[in-house]
Length: 317
Length: 278
Image (cartoon, rainbow over all chains, first blue to last red; front, side, top):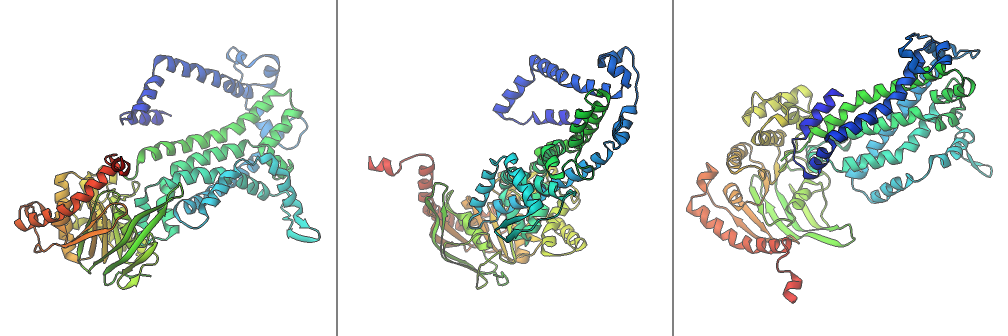
């Protein structure tokens, strides 16, 4: 965070009337106070969550989390319970679901980025008949709600598609694996990913791309050595959005895995826990905190790409 | 695929039309014909928006003419032309790569090994006077130095045709003169055919063997002048005072002025068609 603020402040030196006006308004003492208040209001429940997850069960049952400051008893037993024991008569802990979540989220973030960045490059930089139409269709597909496509897609995966006796799409037999979730998330992500990346990639300086083309680089070469590095900020921001969305997703994960321990992601287990252990806050908060830590780590490790990418500036006169 | 081996560029009756977003047809250049001999330095001057860059795009194969043909080395251009290098007003350097890696990209794109490409890049950086700056990044260099890097990057593949799209347009007058001299020095060594686009008539006359004057939209060839100033020309600052230079410069300017004024009137909202009607 410290580096972010420092770099942002050097950026202020560049002139730009509209932006400096906004900047000045945002750096007034009242604005600072407002931001401080919002930050505190926003952070206190998370702090409560963390503290509750660290307190022994009887403390949680008897007093509020703020009582922790008067009687600081700290235990990691809740984490042990929720990860490995499941606690209170349930055999499995969260651990297999955590592994599932990672095994679902990483490919479901990488696939759409790879496919969408290639599609965006082709649509932005290789002129061919119908490219505008294809882009428009991608754009229009954003309005299709995920919830509407969910059940037909599930039927297609599990039963295939048939007209009369003829099979036009075979049943894939992927039940109990991660593949249906990956495919579903990738498909749902594509319209927005192509749209965002296309807009970014189309704005890249023509000179850089044409110089490489004339030097004899193939389209794939241009894509890999010129476009991808230049598009890093856009790729990183989309990666963050997609990672957080897939990580927090319950609906798609639950639909395509049926909540089975061998492939279901963590939110489906957390939903079960809050049903069966509604009283055991110490278990729930520990589980919730486990699910928060990984996206936080992803965010903080990727955020520097925003700043670096935005300030690098490629073609300067 | 067109090959620039005998780098003769023949542009014959080329017309290029674009479809504007509103669906109208915009004619960028119309019936343009001229020839650049191998090893000849040809400058194209004309007012803004006369399709000079469009012409370059079609010679390099990045773009296709709507009518007419572009031939390089006797063959019709179809796909990216071999043996061509580009230099733009904005230097097309990758900001996350060092100077050395930027210059080495050309041979790497052509399929050379990394070690070989770097050895050649080092040699070219020395030739443009940037030995010792191999490990800098583009943003650590001055505008003139970046221009030298771009020049090394354009020449490292030893092109038979060098296309320059207002390469020194963004430089200050002094740096521009220095870079022009360096360009002439490097050009004398390998003598590629050069297609040099510029707004600056003095620059065109000082550098080129041949000056093509274009009219504004749609771009057509208005006149072609042969510049018979002897080579080597020495410093471009000195040559400006030669009587023959001034003579040619006046002659071409008379042709160009009318076009520039017409283009200016159009962009500045001066006397337009409606104005004349009223």
